[in-house]
Length: 526
Image (cartoon, rainbow, N blue to C red):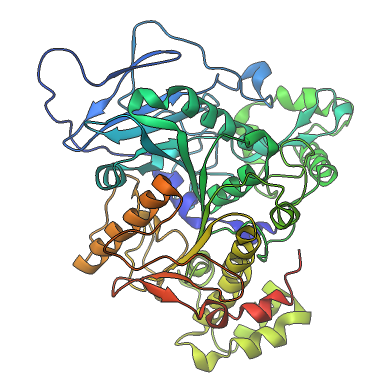
């Protein structure tokens, strides 16, 4: 995967805030404390509001520090008494956000957050949200689930997992200390095992778990679909804005490729001797490690254990964890990424458009891309450029992924298409409309950085409708329900899906044509 494509600007921006504000606690009265819950490592005390209870910063694994750095997650240690779970735990180590903030260097970060209805009954569906951030930034504490819990009558869990080099480094066995990679994916599986053991204490059904991820979180969900080690840990999956196959990011690396990258990285931080690189790296301060990780991509690799084959092969053959899947995208995905290239003072002119296309897509494809995305069809050159990137990198992978899955499991697809969606917290004013950009769907489901946008009445209704689709899918594996447009089962022949918009969600049959997917499929063969 090319790093420039997977810079999830949203999560980098959110990383600058790294906080989730909860509503003011409601009066719980005297007597026994209803906010105290017993889990397998002890008792925790949460916070109660008028609509929900939340439990923040719960350790689900031991701190991956010292000898546990670059080791599979180990069990969390029990604690005496009642542990306060009223504030978020540490984010995992990462560099400062795109718009400022400070580096995070605390490795004690394997914690999760739980939201449950205030008067939770037993057996509620459970949704586990995996955050995005290009596998190098973000935190589960950036997302709260007050509306999701209150409207959908579900339990929601958000998860931290190791990021960057700490979550993705792979080194050969002769490096002095074998480092096998995919630790972030293993962390997510440890969190799912925690859910299976403990979620009943919060009113959740451990046998009804939906994993939901956006951007790098969607890559994570795809990884869990393909990982034999995740079998039985979830019963449904939602993939938002990063399809499992058929996108422009390229094939996932092999273990040999990941080891080679690891050795190059090790040399860059002064651990060049391949016989002792692992030992040398374990002795490095975490700040030095993350300061050197930016030139490298830390996405999952096909290591032979966590992931045993490319996802396109696994999905096509049926060799994956077969559960119902909902696959979604945002109509203008890469307008957010392009903002940081051409929307903050530098303008993409009509004369510069051909060179921008050549730089991104290569000289061999540029003329065809320009012909397919002519400037006369767009209000600004930057919108043509962003549309081509969006369709190539993200969007046309949706029907490819859904088509592979639909051969084996109930599959649904949808596109978020609110052209006037509110900008995410921290996004600076742009010189072009951002439209339905990457991650602009998230505030319709979760409170990002504790903020609920100032929706119009139509957008508020769309948010409620999307929550209804998500939670119905979490409950039954089918997003349909009374009072909203039917969600068609996806099949490759028709390509039908839903399109979410504030003027009315509807059946959408022109997805492939509108996004030129036939054109892109001639290039995207992995």
